[in-house]
Image 1 (cartoon, rainbow, N blue to C red):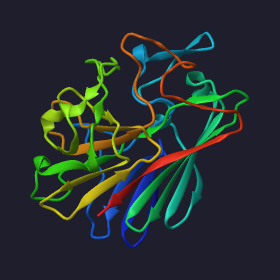
Image 2: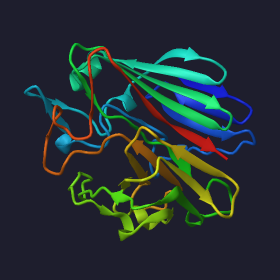
Image 3: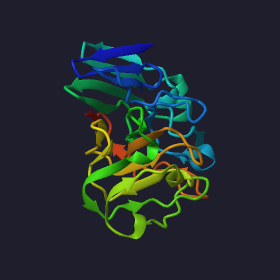
Image 4: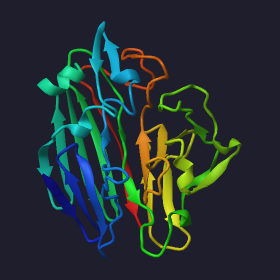
Length: 291
C-alpha cells in the first residue's frame, strides 16, 4: 500500500513494503526521488536493517548457530504495518515474526516515521528491543535522487558538497564489495565538493567517513537542490549502478558497513553494530531538505 503525506511545499509517498520512500514531489510538480527504472536499478530508497551492506557468503553466526541474510538485511522486503497517519506524517512498523526470526533471532520493533516540516522530510528510526538479551543491529538509508533534477542539465552539471572542507576517508572495498581495511583519505587531500561523473562508480560505491553530517546535491546552473543531514550516522555512501550512465545518485547514511573480505561475521563481534540493552530504545534517522 502507498501512503501519501503532504504540505504546501512537498507531497511524499511511502510504500508499506519495506517502508520505502516512493516519491518526493515539490509543489510545482518536480519529482526529486528516483523512480526505480529496472534498466539501472529498481529500488528507490530501501531501509538497511539489521545490517548495512552484505555479509560474506550471505551468512553470519550467533551463539554457535549459522544464519543467512540477504544484502542490507530483512526490512527492505518486509511488509510494515500502519501505526499512524496524518496529513503531514506517517508511521510504519515492523515487528519480529516467524519469518524474521528465521534470519535474525531477536524480538524487536522497528518503527519508521516520515514527517514533513516545511520543505524538509524527517525520516526517523525507532528501534525497540523487545528481547531478553541485547539487540545487535545496524541501520541506514539508501535514498536515490534524480540527476539531473530538472530538464536541460546533465549528470556532470551536478556535485555533492559538504558545508566545510574535510579529509574524508574512503572505505576500501574488494571487487565483491567487502571491507579490506585499507582505507585512505579520499583523493589524498582535503575536499569540500565531489563533482559528479558516471565513471566515479565504475568500481561501485564510494563510502566515506570523517565527513560533516550533511551533504548537498546541486548544480550551479539550477536553483533546485537536495540536502541530506545525518547526525546519527558515521558513514555517507554515494552510489549508482556501476559502469552505466544511470541518471540518479544514492546518498546513503549508514551506521555500519559490510563484512570483511573472506570472513563470516560473528554477530557478537561484528564491527560498527549497535548493542541495545533489553527494554531500551534507539532513535536515529536522517533529513532530506528540498530547495
